[in-house]
Structure formats: C-alpha cells, structure tokens
Image 1 (tube, rainbow, N blue to C red):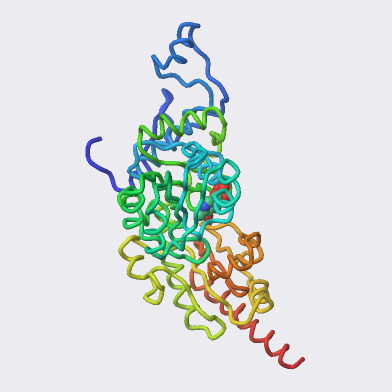
Image 2 (image 1 turned 90 degrees about the vertical axis):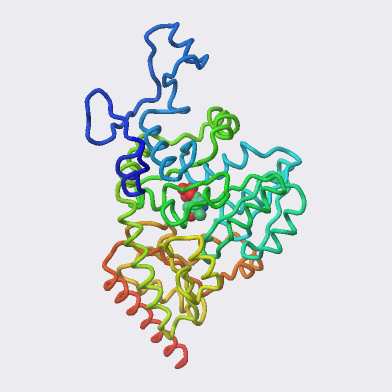
Length: 402
Ligand SMILES: *Cc1c(COP(=O)(O)O)cnc(C)c1O
C-alpha cells in the first residue's frame, strides 16, 4: 500500500502477514525451531542466500509481525523485540558501547536503567556521566567532550520531568553520540523521538502496549545499519528474545492502544485538575497542565499529556500511606500504563535503592505518589481519590489529639 496510513490504522492492520490458512487474526507460532526441505536449503539459509526462519532466538513469524507493526508505527527502519523493557535498554547500550567509551544520561531514569548506567557500565570501563535532564547547560557541558551514546527518558519516572529531545540530539550528534530515548511514558502515540533527532527508541511493551497486566516485553527501534550490524549480532548470541506467545498478546493489545491511551490521557488530565484543588495535596505534576515547570516544552514536544500524574501529599510517609491504604478502587502496584489505575510510593518501592540525596535531587519526597491512570470511569476514580484524601484529614486530627 503506497498511501501512508494513520497510527490507529497501523495499530490494527500493520505488519499482518497471513499464513496460507487466511486467518483473520495473527497466527501464534509457538515453535522454537524450523525445518528445512533439504540440507542444501539449511546451508543456503545459514549463508543468508535465502530468507528462511532458523531459530526463534533470532526471529519467529509471530514476533516478526509485531516488529513490523512497531517499526511502521514509530517510523523506524527496523525493530527488534526483547523479553523485557530492561533487556531492550541493556541490549541497546551494551551492543554498542565498549571499554573506554563515554555515555551521558539524564539523571531521572527508571530505577534499573539508573543501575545499568551507574553500576554496570563502569564495571566494563564505560564512563557514565549524569546530568539534570531539564538543564540544557549541563547537557552542553557534558557533551563538549566526545561521547558514544546519550540515554534519556522523557517524561521521566516518577517526576514527569522532560528533556528537550531536539536540543539534546543536536548537542549529542556534535559530540559523536547516538541518542537513545526511553519513550515508555509518552508511548509511540504521544511523542515521536526519531522525528525530533533521536537515533534509537526503546520501549517496555509491558506498559501501555500490552496495557492489560499480562505479559512482559521490550523493543528497540533504530536505523537499518545499526540494527543489523550492531544490535542483531548481540541479541542473536546473547539471547534476550521475546516469546512468540508474548508477542501475540502484545499484538492484540496494540489493536486498542490508541483508544486506551486517548481515554487514559483524558482521565489523567481530569484527575490532575481534581487533585490540584485539594488542600491535602501540596503539588501536582502533569505535563499538559499550565503549572508544570516545562509546560511549554511539553506542548511543543508531545501531542498529549500522558497517562501518569505525580503529586505530593502534605505531611509525610504516614499521611501518604494512610491515603494509599484508603483507596478502594485504585490498586497499590508498581506497574503502570495498565487499564486498571495503579498507585505507587516511589521513595519506598521503585526508587528505594537510590541514595537519599539522589532521591532528594530528583524531587522525590516521602509524600510523592505516582498515579498511573487507567480506564475506569473518571467519576469513580475521582470519588475514590476524594474519599482517600478525606481519610488523611482523619489521620491528622488523630495525631493532633495525641
Ligand atoms: C517499566 C520500564 C522499563 C523496564 O521495562 P520492563 O518491561 O519492566 O523490563 C524501562 N523504562 C521505563 C521508563 C519503564 O517504565
């Protein structure tokens, strides 16, 4: 088809490769290996003279359909799937970097990404430097020295801090670095890093793409030469492959990605507005609210505010836990991007391993709550949040009386 299809259509139709049975939905090829017609055909396959599936660690017809759908959606040459989002981040970095290389990363990274950069890479003699992602001067300074890669997350977990992708990509390219964007919070629908100058985009498909709490998955998208020459040999030989079963589940999830993300964004915006009116809440962070510190960048760089809202409950850990425990509809869980609304306390869960001063630097306090807004009726969500905030008032009164 020559006409460029829009994202909602790509999500439903993209990548579909029907077998000779003419099935409506994608077929699930639960097979580890493949057979050849002859020894000659096997030889020709291994010499890359013909195209034939070899082994599901390298490729599988079901995972190929998902790779093609995601590449189409992202506008990338190629996509390779991994078992988890962390396998995707790890493979993108470790396939490319070698001893003596330098990586510059925004400080506000997903906990495990932070560990890879701060702990794993230096073990292999790869120098890693963190900058405050929102501060272009720090990027300028760090990228005045040559670097091999830049890693950034925007919006970040959990403080929804943004990085100016266009500006950082320019600085990174001048320093000789490839730019890797972890685009999980924005989803492929709300932010287009490759169009903004990034070279490689990574996803946890566990989040919005499955979005229904079922399977783990990861994806790396990038230019043909890099994927075939750098990433592919790494993943063929180290084996972070996604199961074809998980690929099939994610294919089904993607058919409704746009419907879900659009509705979750509407719900999140309404929840953020509600929270900002409440006396128990010290501040609300939501990229599309005018009071977000980087609102201008958010509306320039993103086409929606996202599905997460982060806020500070007044008081401390006791008040915040009281609020979380009083929620009846919203679940306490560290996952995100799910159809069910989920709430987490980063200081004691996802970010507990960070040193205290690093948490403070990121702005994570004892009262910080990250809310992943789901698909429930927003009126029910707001009622649940209101009741739980009312319960803090009770706690404060009890303490005052003690
Ligand atoms: C969840 C997440 C990851 C890791 O993905 P997994 O599928 O859990 O391995 C990486 N980056 C961000 C921003 C995430 O939210």
